[in-house]
Length: 301
Image (cartoon, rainbow, N blue to C red; front, side):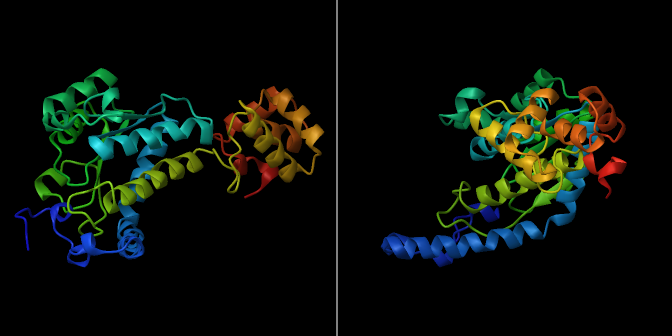
């Protein structure tokens, strides 16, 4: 039975139509079966996701920023991804930012009416002063959220690159105004319209790819190791020493000394060790290589 909405995220899922009669284990099995559809849906969007990674890499290399904008679950997922970048990659907190309809209070308590204002979305973009060096990724499971559409339109007017992450097909007239459109359709939700479920999972996977991919491209990793983290607490100091020891063969004490001399940067310490140079020499070599360790001749490709 249809509930009169053409958006996939608002359709009833026949496979979960009697979930209210299910046992706890049956609920788990139904949800797990639906979640298995998500990765395949995301895989269909590999090319536009890669395109957005390229946009973000260009932004990062050109002193630009990445912004996410969304309402409700979508906005919270953008803020989550943005907040995880500094501790993971040692990036400046302003490099990746999340904007949510209703402002900071909406992170913790729903502000449902805020998502209905295109003008509110545009105002948020003006407040952040987006420009030609920046990228804005809108997040809207339904693809129709007025706040998000207003933000994307204003960002485009200001010269920023724009993209949308959605989980239901988007009308061509709007899609054509964007630089990239990512639409991962995993089907109706287990609980009709609850886009915190499959749509939320798909969105989280896509945002992971965008920021992780762009950070890798600008040299935040060496192989699959997070070498651009800053040793700012006990856990990160321990991880930094372990990474440096593994890559150089140095003892933990030697790794600790190297890190202190590098100013707490694993990447700088690694280059110092390989080039047998001081911090300034290592930083100069990294700058010349665009921050990518593999581009330094001594490391090979």
